[in-house]
Length: 336
Image 1 (cartoon, helix red, strand yellow):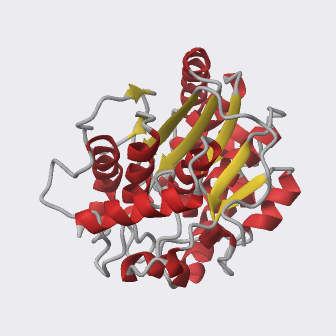
Image 2: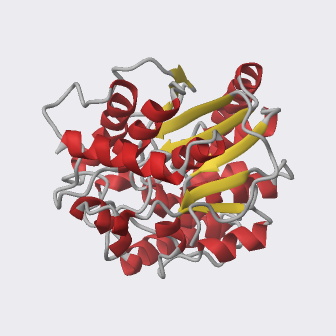
């Protein structure tokens, strides 16, 4: 497969790379999220990823950016692309448990709640409006916006939002063994509750079962005047489902081939149903002689912190597949 599926019809002028950070308390449910060494520590992952991508190292804790199995985190791949391209990253706080240690834009949100116990995102409508305001700001600063996310537990909220909007979705996971039955059980429980209340409007669905990243991203998509590419897999398709339900302009989505090849997720099918142009990056991690990166090819991690979009951006800026691969290898070997 070529490095990038498809040929974009837009130019890479004045690119900007942003990541929306958020937490949902469902990431602390044991077995549901692999984005952290323990369920409780998943709440720290967006903060640590922001430090790594911004500074090239995790500064608040003595940690290396690898999973317990030695697989480099997606944020380390994103950092490699930031170094290669020279594009400074911008972070947006949609609602975090812990304070950030890097500069950021604040969407004035709060941590997403467990939807089994009430509304998950009470401020969904406010966050959508704040996202629109941020989209206007970013329009003045760039012509191409690559917008990623880091929300541990976000594939489960994505599943709930997609299903609530009528899509026959199955979603990916950072685990090699996707906890499909646990996600299905969770989703069925929360959707049964909102069906009794006849929750059908997109922002009301986010309020009920979503996470704080989704309304911020949808708001940005509403007002951003350049070319928008959402960087991520099923979580960004959940954003697209909201945009489509609100009759907004549909962005493209860029992710890794490891998400598209996940047999437990129907990413390609969902993109087709929504009319989303899906670009998939194949970084060839099985060919680089790095045991940790090769784990991506076997279903570990797959994507996160805009890694697929960061590689997409570098390629669009004219960097070759060889240059991208060499920079990733150089970066992850330095960490190990």
